[in-house]
Structure formats: C-alpha cells, structure tokens
Figure (spheres, rainbow, N blue to C red):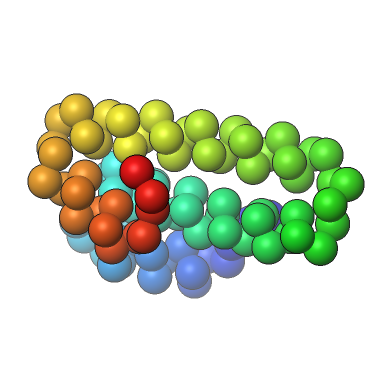
Length: 89
C-alpha cells in the first residue's frame, strides 16, 4: 500500500535532516516503516493477498538493510531512530 505525499512530507520533516531530505537513511527508514504498518493492517483483513505478502517481505528486507547500514555508520543515530519508531531490534 502506498502512503500519501502529505504523509511522506510529514515523515521526512520529522525524521530527515531538512524538510526536503527524502534521501537520508532516517527518512527512508521512517517511510518504509509507515508502509510496512499499512501493509500489515491490509493483510490482517486480506489474508490471501499473496502479492501484498511478497511486497511486505521486500519492504522489511529493505528496511533491515538500511538499519544495518545506519548501525554500522552512526550507532547513536541508529539507537535514537529505533527507539523513536518503536522497532524491535
């Protein structure tokens, strides 16, 4: 499931370094987390939607790779982001 442009801008403003910083690792992770949340809610209702399940797995793995990179390069930022997003890691 996609998220609206307004929601994306809101997430980037909150987690990015600047208001237009869509490329930073933190803002990408926050956007992926929102999309994962939306897909999880969708799959609770539509249990047999296999393409959505595959999309969810792809998003989770992308977010996992970004979290791994952030942990390797900036550990303090990683800890803050995981705590703020409530990701169990």
